[in-house]
Image (tube, rainbow, N blue to C red; front, side, top):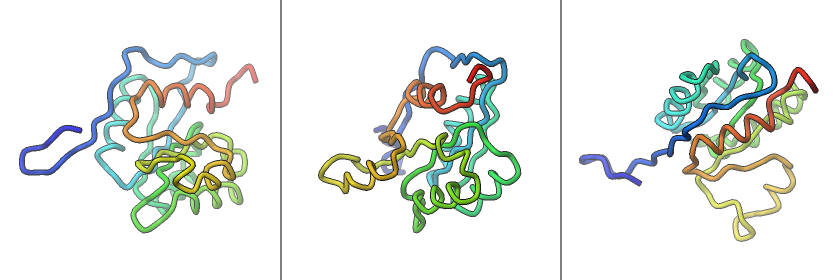
Length: 151
């Protein structure tokens, strides 16, 4: 955590030192869904500089519109989107775009352990990345989730 002047605290993401490389030549398109715009902009800046197309959404409606217009290769969805839930978006994805469901990684600021409703994390069967995260962690999830030409 870093303290901003008169602004309270701000979470920072540590930067990885190497770009993601996949077997195909095109970099995966990402959709990052988070109501914390600062984190979304940092993700967008980091991955755009490495050749990815990054779409941001701050809520479920924006994410649905983005998916309909530009189906992403990989999705990162915050579990808690203000008054909405990333689980609701996941349910919509499973119903509307089922091929994208295996490309979802959840991110959360809450601990995803046995003391915090562990059954939810296991039931969804999707990876959960704890905030704050570093971009190297996101790159590993992208490599695992992105469709490949050789698959």
